[in-house]
Image (cartoon, rainbow, N blue to C red; front, side, top):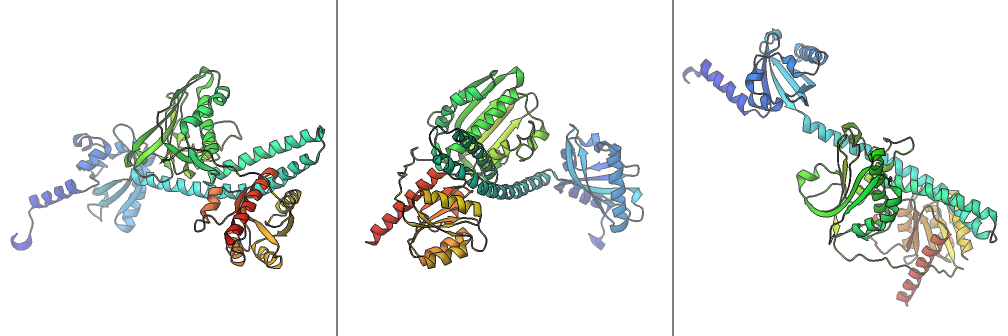
Length: 519
């Protein structure tokens, strides 16, 4: 324009253009806190037509007088200092739902902010959702580390309890009454070991024997047990898909998942009873659906699913939000690790969980697992026979584990040399060339199992090394991915005499193979 000026009509057109183009809500509050302007995005955000907002008090957007006054105080206090005020608050949509908002306000006249302010309203719903996911993931990770550490130390204690009870029982004469007491000790120790496995499952390190599994066959196998486990008022209904793809998983842990979900469903039915539906199938999942699934990071594609649906009491939104917290439970004290362990198992199997539930409307839990194409088979078993008579180096930082491990190996006919850590293991190996096998703990000071393994193999490249840990075999094997056939065996803590016998048979077979190749 001539003279660079701008008419009032042109200025208004420019302002209205900004109002229309802005991707966030914009409005104007006049004296008396009356809304005198609102753009389309603000109306859509709040679910109102423009004529239902303009001319109304700004108080209508808030849930309480207290929140309305707080926002005003904090906003104008910031304006007095910075010239602009930004406050987070909750607004109420027309349908009653709450919307988290970042409200930024600037006065029309900085010298007299009471004459009216222009504001922007940024919807924080998605940001809050992402923040909650990140915080939840961080909490799960930190608690997982804690759970794994507890399980590691607890497993070392159980090696001594279970191992010594096992040895003592084998020494007793037939018919001894003390044998019954030792059996009770072993039973209690194995239950404690199951609790450790739950902790490790929650930590995401709970897979032990991964193989191709048929979910249909697994559910069918559990049928008889489930009939006894669930409430007498519960009706089990199966909808198992035909030609279901296999999944790569630990069958024992998947059984734990199914049992836990069905037990929860049975309890949700209460005294009135109802139906529990167990459903399997395969489905294609897009990104929008997977965004609602918790667990491992899943990519769009095909998944095998297991659903457990009940017609029970359902859950509130608050209960559902906390369902996977390890120390939250709707049951009596001492039953709080169930769904957290399920979550850990599913996540460790690269799967996810979706839960739909509402009070009075029942619950549907869906487990997604990646399919694995191949033949479901049975893992070959090595004969549990050992010759004995050789020298074994047993390395562990826990004295109780060294003691019971030595007793078991000596019972099998071996001579045992002990080491407290990886560095001492290297000294013993250099000083005792007669050592034919090493049983090596994974978690130790000075040199851990991974570092000690590498150093031991430098000294004796063909030396059979058996790794021992409370962590899963897959978790241990993942640390040796560069040398897949380097390990002669794996000994899961807590172990008993038969497990030591089996793993030593594997080590002797490994040594015979290496000697045959050398010839």
